[in-house]
Length: 163
Image (cartoon, rainbow, N blue to C red; front, side):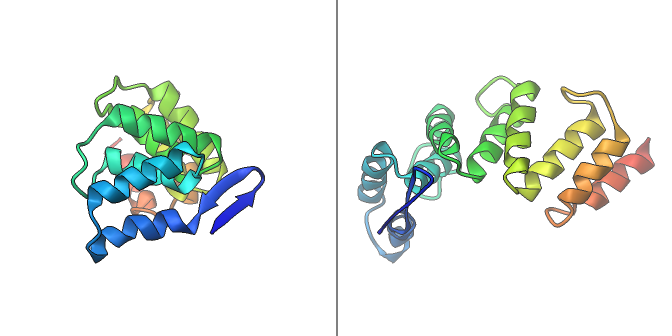
């Protein structure tokens, strides 16, 4: 079943196919099928491939450059998780040069799309002065927006107590 919304092609089939590996389907066959779906513009298949290359669940060899490729395609189509994943790659410098400017822009994009963890990551950037000037007020504001994810508020107050 294909879903077309605002020019974005997504499919429930991509997720079902990916999860079918647990049911005994061959991981390489499933990954190959996801590649075909992703190349035809399926946003979910693009995102799933990004995750599979970034943090493999199956027999895929990690390949951050390949993950970036698929995440960028998914992000261009409006996938909410892709900018967050890309931001994390550039923030953490996983097989790429740390680039806080890119990370900030990508976290901001994900935050504007409703990803709470992205607000937390932005808050940490303001708390640590990464790409931006240290701004405890903004750090608190952004960490509060992401409070439900990973105990961000607690993390913020621990940082404040140390300063």
